[in-house]
Image (cartoon, rainbow, N blue to C red; front, side, top):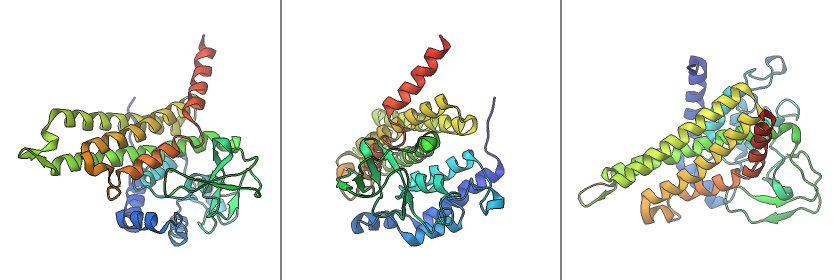
Length: 296
């Protein structure tokens, strides 16, 4: 069976890509890292006005009235540019939390194990936990501040959709690092020729592309079916693609990739954090193992 995006879906993806390229390009990313301010309120409102958070809110409620497949396409583009902020929680809360759909409210929720909450200080609304006694926790990603909140637990009703949207972010990151590695391999020269001409580098780039495309296919399929096992598989594949592609991109860049000036490390650090959000590898494996046992 052959699946293709509709013209409307392609237009949606292109529009979001153009918006994010203009409003959150590399300079904006580095400025956010340097300033330590991960949530740009003005940009957040612009995203709300563009329908980023209201994609799945019914039209009669003032939303766009689309579905999970379209949301996945939009979040993939956000993952490409490493757009920070509690994107998943705010999208899931749109329609139930006032002003979330419009981007006038930033919503967060416990989406990590151990009672960790991302973007607590930047959020207007915290779901699934009560404030009080929270402690800051050092995060590996400079644009994902973390707090430990006593008694915080991820909202179970949102776990599957939260995992899938996070997987879409991971896919976007995996595709971005693949593209970055290929461009660098074509520009950087050693021994009088581009490093991309060397077989080892070719193999790395080819493996990155396959990894990202397999994960993207799994995410798209899970967005259509909504099946628990497919969501778990999509999260596993997307996490692996994001982390391993960032590592391979570092290797293609050589010593340059490990410098603060390169953006590759930001993709790797964000991928590490997202791999622990909404559904960890262990939790996804348990879901898949349960489904396999049910077939025996």
